[in-house]
Image (cartoon, rainbow, N blue to C red; front, top):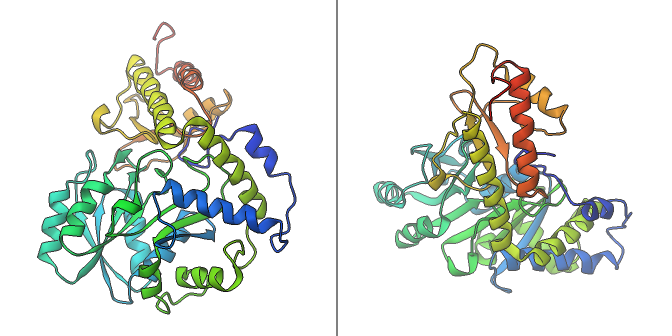
Length: 370
């Protein structure tokens, strides 16, 4: 069981789809790919002719950098609420692309306050965009793109949302947020596909307004869109991860059959609640209060015990068929546990039992502990 924010545990049908060899230039592949693009645009609330799903080989950082390069001119400024490690990465990608990140200090233990965004935008009229991490997996805090987007829209600015660890579970609707230039995500998180494919659902006019400014052929969303105009919506620019796309098609079938975003969120929240209740029963303390804890990942304060060693704990869990992250992503020691993927509350309860047994083996919990 992969209890990490991604790649996630996948369904056997999704894995089986990876065994089908496909020729991406074959005409039979084109409707598969075009269908996937239409489906993810629909999940994002995109409108045909207004929004386009623009895929790119690689991880979330690839589609994030492509968005920053395409939508911001060289020297352009973007406000980034510094919510944690992934906001830090957004700032670095911005800087290395020759754009200017303007960091906004915000608390790490609660969602970003829209009024802080409004004040920062009012203070600097040269900032054109806001960059928001939808769900900050360094802490587990989930932010509200609709509430934040309202103040961005009021200020006459634009917005980019990194929804890599949230898309498909937390709601977002590009069709009702005209200030939202792009939402970006990957195949291997809450949509429960395989890694290797990123998407940007973007406003076409914003993408074309940035034509020629990416400074990279590979990371140019405008070029991806122009390729579709020239060669058809089912033609992938450069060699695609064809088997990953086929597996993603099956993952989307399962997403629809489950009931889409609301049902997926409900299952992940149930997983989260089982985990948090179980950790508290073991005497451990989650980093976040439940009312601000997102559905993707829960951080747990490391036990204050001489015998505590994160790698030893990770290895003990792996022997019990549970895998968690083996590094700290917060300024203080806390281990993080993913709640997403093809897992149920019953699976999470088994994982909690494994954690308790591992802590007992390490001498951190007594054998009669819960």
